[in-house]
Length: 295
Image 1: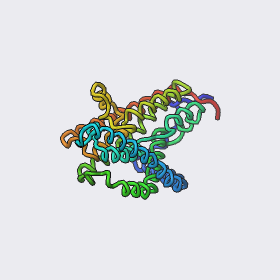
Image 2 (image 1 turned 135 degrees about the vertical axis):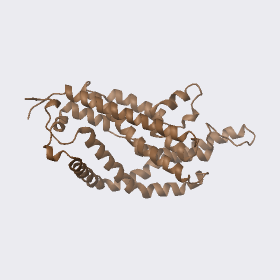
Image 3 (image 1 turned 90 degrees about the horizontal axis):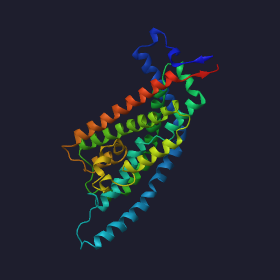
Image 4 (image 1 turned 60 degrees about the vertical axis):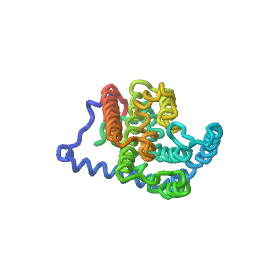
């Protein structure tokens, strides 16, 4: 027996309203939250372990700035518009941003479900694959930050001296928060789009490796993008990767001019809409060509 997406079951008419859909989504979200609370101890310990490499970064950049300062006769040293304290604060903030935007095992998990035929259950359930995975990721991030808020607060308190400008103004912090939320959604739909390639290719691990490599370097997770050569920085700044790590940190540290901030947030939102469309289009086309066999 062959089942295609065009034969998928639709719920009765009286159950297809907005209220019924919201109720379904809430049940999925609540269940996912309860499941992930089991890992609360792992989340707390893992958060502290996440910040350990910052110690190495502090010593590394201290040596870099010291060597440059020795050759500049005591002038204040900046590299890529970042001073020593600012660049350490930048690394701390990119860890926050990457905790929002990183989606471990999302693309590979989607490809595996397609390859092994597990995706056929979404042909008869009253919610699609993308919606279900988005709700479970929201539950994961909510649980993670509820549990990890204490380790984050401890690390930022101990490193408060590196934030030379202090806490940003309310409008800037609101923009920072908006960029984190959009960064989460861009990260989700970008990786989900890669996972959808599994409808056409059985294995996406090589493609995913290349994507993760580019994402690591071009998101600003390894170093601020302003350290790139002038010949390639404008091109990298145009790409969507910067919104996964660099952009939220730059907002918090005041590296984005206030006049340019609305436009930058609008561009980030445009990238989000683009990846939502790509993901949905790929899912729709993929389900039309997918065939499952068996009961």
